[in-house]
Length: 178
Image 1 (tube, rainbow, N blue to C red):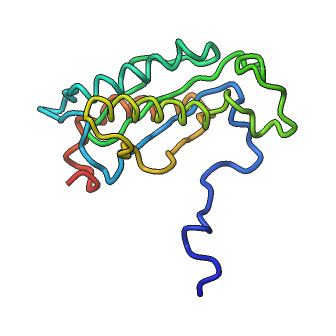
Image 2 (cartoon, rainbow, N blue to C red; image 1 turned 90 degrees about the vertical axis):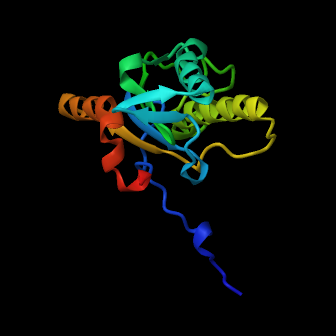
């Protein structure tokens, strides 16, 4: 019997001790389950969203409406056939104020206001809505987890913003998409 199977020892990609509800910019990438191309297609270097892609785009932008401490900008977000990239800006955070919960004893696990809660809520509502559209209850839409990067300099922001903007043009060059 194996005492510690590999899936029980996954290494966290999160920065140890960092408060993910801190004000600032976070670059996020979320990939579809088994890299399925669900959201549309790339035609002549441009992303053409299908009805599922429109749901994803709408729910991403709605995140800022539902969470007053989040700012999102359309030019800092892209839906691709099998993943999304976007920048989430957290501003004016008062832990506990927006989620009607008591202040946590560990500030690094703020319920409802951190990047984890934001991504979890987004993935959940998109999954629910897409499964309703497809008539496929309980079918996964997203891979487990997501990639994030804390944006700490203007130079990093410029590189990330350009990456997001040019992602459809680079689609054919990405070995993950072949």
